[in-house]
Length: 112
Length: 116
Image 1 (cartoon, one colour):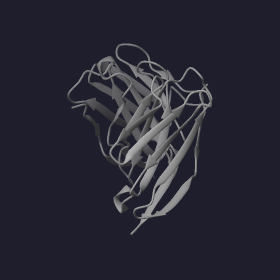
Image 2 (cartoon, helix red, strand yellow; image 1 turned 180 degrees about the vertical axis):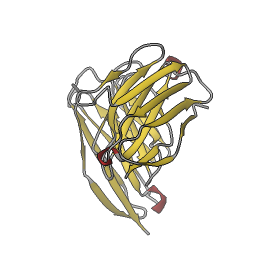
Image 3 (tube, one colour; image 1 turned 90 degrees about the vertical axis):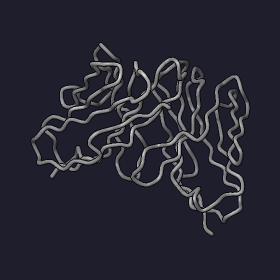
Image 4 (cartoon, helix red, strand yellow; image 1 turned 60 degrees about the vertical axis):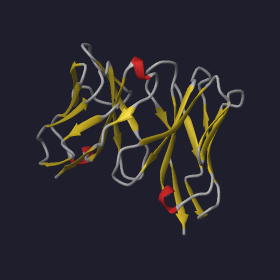
């Protein structure tokens, strides 16, 4: 089955810096890769996703890149703000509405 | 759009009792719902896939007789934790989606279960 690894487990940056979180997956059949932000005690919120027919996707300060050959994808947050502090999860799944396999999470702390 | 609700938001029960958690899709029909469990400072672990009108598919290691899932309608799935024990204390989250929403899963707010 699919296995998703995520690094780093914790990431501390200064406000205004960029943050990068990386994930690798094992199943070459996976082709949907969402990123979720989860604040303490809250539900995961989808912040961006990418499908295998696209190499990069950007939404304001957030971007995701995908390298299908190497089976890894990354989340990039620019101009970080304290409100970006949360736990971020990557995930992977196949075509259509299938189960998501989550990474282990990255705790991002943005200091003012 | 694509709102998912869960009830209750938190529940405290005694060991040995059963607890039912509801997951509802409020503005769309969810042919498939997923149930996850999340322990403190850990990732979301899929417990089972719930398809409307059919039996749930459980992940390896999840006891189907302990975690009963019913998906009787296109807007409601329930998870019943039977004979709950302290080790079942966790954050239970459902997600829902439909073909019209492609692969996107929308999560409920979660239910925090504490078994004493």
